[in-house]
Image (cartoon, rainbow, N blue to C red; front, side, top):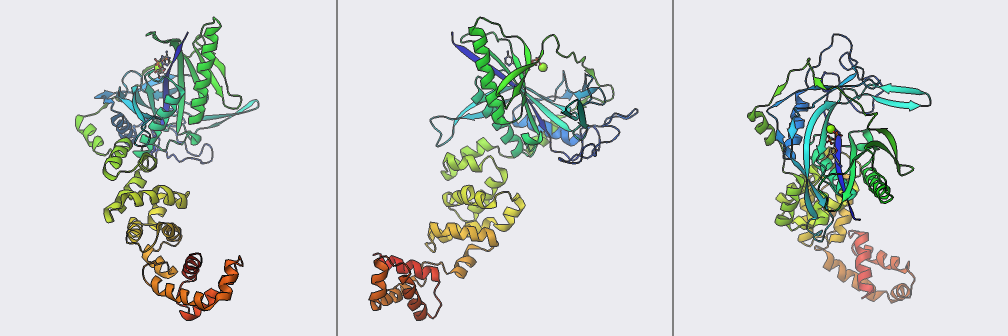
Length: 481
Ligand code: ADP
Ligand code: MG
């Protein structure tokens, strides 16, 4: 029998904010444990939550990006459970009136038209809601340590429909989510820092069957590639259970990335009953049409749209647009340079290759300072004019990034201009070659250092004005002719 996999993902994403979801308590990543708390976070008696408006707006923004219907009225619910990561013994979340409903995430898969764009597909969303994070437990031996720094940090939970059918699609889905959320400045989505976490629901069914199979929920998927491997494994496992005549049980399983297997965490009988009810300490939120429109205005042109435009307007191939477009700053920088000098292909190649290589881990303000767009535009112009070759330009670019100087300045300083005195230098070099047959013969018979004698002669003739590198280049060109 042939099976089809069905996958739905629940993704938690930390919203980039200065303070927590329901208090003014500051949040920054990587601080000493339990230094970022306050009476609200620690749930001391008598404290009350206050909604972080910015977090709500960012969650609405995410909803608009993914084409969700934004609720007119949304409210807060308590999800009750007893565990030390949550001092209140309930987590504030949204159960029956989430902020965003429906929508979809556009994903890109490998495909035949990869030189322009991959194959695009829309994965349906169920909802996006806001909630607060809980503390982080670290188990060591028989002890457990708790850090409440993360408790109360705003999260959006993005719940997909069971609308994916392979680990590949789930992988592309997560990449697309991350690309859009980082691009719009909603989150940094760094999985290593816990800013993006994913639970995967996996089931299989015979091809052609409408009804969904029993799902297994996978937890502890700590990286995007971990998600892919965990799902691949789980699909294979379920298939072999069914092929052996067994039944899939509804379970929560843990992905063990080292052993590359899934193990049972809890079954249906031991599942939590969260006893959801409306939080009496928080008013529902009303979202007027005007607010939705205002937030929509802040959404930039999105990466896939930009990618198509870059192809249509600048004729850039997928290999370049797929590097430029997911990065807001990089693609803006590219367009700034193109506005100053219209050579999109040359400029795009420098940005996608040389700039990314040279800038390494530098943050964007450093990059834009060291190599303003106008310097790159000038470099492109000098290539077009034939002042320097593309090859030399690559060297110049490295110097430009190091020194912060413009292409023109560096070319003068390094004597790299190939249009000006090259012809004069050429005739001097030719004279030197004609007058020094011994050194020439030695060089041509393989004695490399013999060229130095010729260089010395040229230096003398030009009174040291010519650039040694250029002399070397011209001499070699004439000698091997
Ligand atoms: P639960 O009631 O167990 O929380 P939900 O219906 O709320 O389940 O769905 C949770 C997630 O599981 C969603 O992302 C959804 O797409 C996914 N899902 C639901 N049923 C299935 C299934 N049969 N196979 C795969 N994924 C599923
Ligand atoms: Mg559910």
